Image (cartoon, rainbow over all chains, first blue to last red; front, side):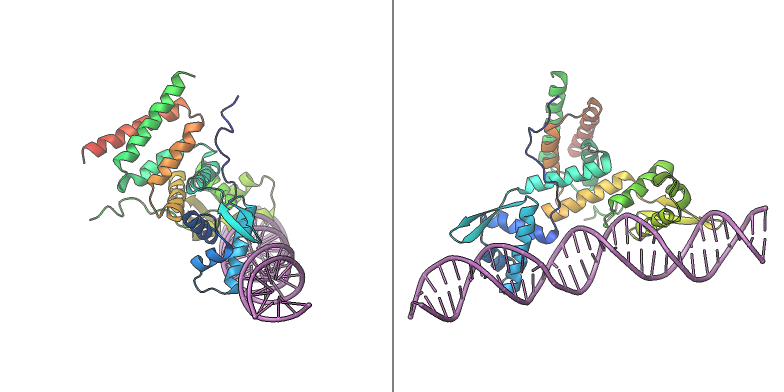
Length: 141
Length: 141
DNA sequence: GACAACTCAGACAGTCTGTCTTAGTCTGCC
DNA sequence: GGCAGACTAAGACAGACTGTCTGAGTTGTC
């Protein structure tokens, strides 16, 4: 009972690398027109590149990563997910495919992967506070 | 200087869901023949399914996830990566695409995602020992 | 020698992705 | 009024990837 739907929904679709570059631009510049995005991603790009960006936005919208509104006759596009949501979506997808949905194996492997490379003291501290929080809610349900 | 090559190489290719089911079978049963894997994955499957498994193994081998040796005239296939390596590979891929390769943003998001849902007491305990281990190696380099 | 099982190579359709073309619509300006 | 320029919408296209399957050759058994 409960313990669901209290976190915003995670993206279930996959954003392509190219689609991701459009999202990155939207994150950097906020709500933008196709024209502005095209100029950013393909400087000097003509009508063809413009249409490419248009199609990428259309697909991103279908996947729920992007929303649009109209300002006069032109469309304004904005990202409807932030980078963190995208990351969490991919993490969850990895967990679903490789760990039956469980997240803790990911934590284990993440720490292992980071072992050689440095994890900052801040990272470790945030991990520790997670463990403390989890322990608390475990003892006092 | 250094801090490289002391961890085994991470898979750089992507294993499909279907390919993954073959890997899962190899993890469960260890070194196996195509026949045994086919019987496991497609019970009662005929020559067609056999060939499907064969092709999946061929592609897994090309991607470096599977190795083969010959026992007499039949081939014996084994996984050359374990589940953890696959997980770490996907984590690194996510980090590369979404965080410029840095792993700590993944940690942050993972903690956030794990916060909401229930982790088992075992998970929490193993997490705690993980944190303790990290803190130790942090204090005493 | 016939048969069964295995291997190897490749065909095939369906899907996904990035790219581009075309046609239609609206704008403001001369 | 009408025209050039910019925007939208719809879809065509090739290349890659995936899961599936067929066929031709090999090898060992009875």
